[in-house]
Length: 323
Ligand code: DP6
Image (cartoon, rainbow, N blue to C red; front, side, top):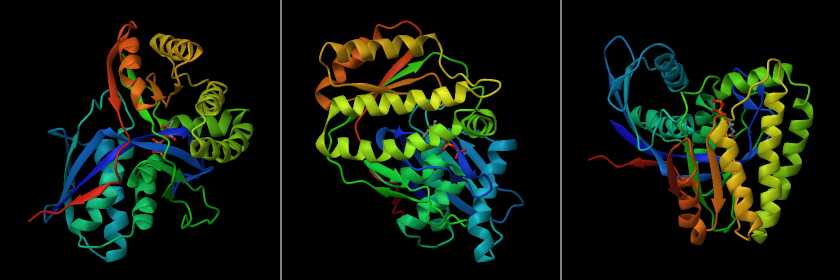
């Protein structure tokens, strides 16, 4: 049996659009921060039964969730010529129902644990490529801290992997978890629909390349004002692209707008803070560690929030040594 822990990440420059859906190749790069608080721990065991098995937080899964895991396991079994089935037992140490980037930590943990269960050692680069096949954002969760995902240019995806980014900008996250039903349109479907129908998509992809360079420079110099302009701009441009699809994809809910306003008014009164929002209603504020409790208290007063989570930067995905 092999057990791995991986953490979710939140993107400062978003991945939104694929150049190849089969190999799950992103159309542009992205940049994220891995978060300590959003952890998934996954054990993988080989067995001789007829089917793969998946338990998430104690609940046996079937249908789409299970077949996604089976297809992922085939990426490891196929080239090895192995046929054993796997039993996956996974625990999320954060609310999965809230839809907080759980595919990133889930597939990063699997990209470490599945090869290990078959006694295959992979480099971090190979793990990142494998994780990407499960979910694009998972490629980034192989690494800790700030991470850059390369879009790559090769048709086989051999250059579409993530790498750690040296930047010692002290950044924590405060997450305003909106009270909302489970995501109606997941990121995979949302970004594919946007690519196919949004008139803004080409402009979005051009913007990403520019933002990637500028965010890296602003991270090196710790320029919070410039980061705020770039990261909020990139997030809102991603959502503008999605909203312009036909029909439009709108992830914001009323608490999302309240939290955006709260972040902007804190910034106006001098607090270094800016927000980002993934394919859901939750708002994530990035801020230096000294401001975390003040921002969390501010968020806690907003109506319509289920909870407020805080997190520092997280480590890379790791294999646990089991005796
Ligand atoms: C909005 O990685 O979930 O969170 O590759 O189809 O599994 P698939 O998509 P996924 O998309 C993440 C989209 C995002 C932005 C980001 O994390 O960069």
